[in-house]
Length: 250
Image 1 (cartoon, rainbow, N blue to C red):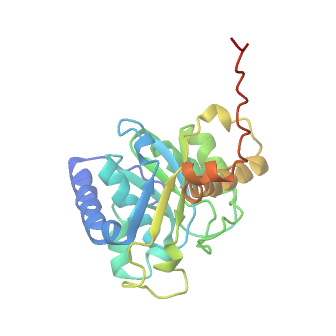
Image 2: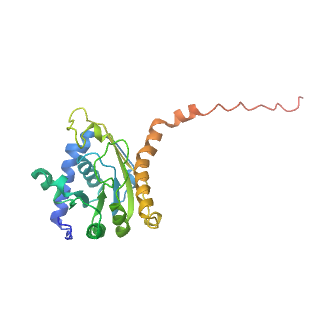
Image 3: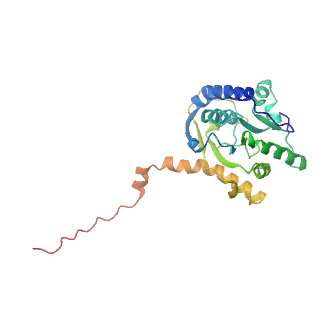
């Protein structure tokens, strides 16, 4: 869509997104996802601002599939027009779900476009990849300032997401690995963040806040995965045996 438009959430749009979500879930999410954590925290009746790390254009397809499965659609994804319009397939896929902008420096017109996108929170769940470009899939890069203006205008509950091991399936410059990438991807949905927790932050503090929340969504779950209860108990020092008091002898 053009950045000045407002999308009407018609039955046709919902039907198209449901069809895309079902197809993405069956053809991509099921074969390539190993585990999803935290999705039960998301309420279908609520509109959220999802912020996620970014490795591949397949991130959008994967999140769209999972949010369709949980009932959190329609969605609207903030994306780069150049990345999504360089082939007719990507252009067709992005049309019902994307809010596409030209890459460029942040200026007053760009801020207005971001605020227009943010106001769509009334009708859509918003998905933003704050790094601004596709990263390594291991570390979360510095977030671009655009997410600050989106969050300030949307004033919505924010959900950080860390997509783990997507680089084993596809990357920005690498090829698609349809066989070796099977059952490799893990998606971690972090704790919901209320607007009151971030609206008072400066732009610089907020972008670092978002980066840490995205990275933490994956690391927190990884700690529990690597240290299950029995392993944690093994790491604890043994407690001294209680000394019995036999009491007075008869």
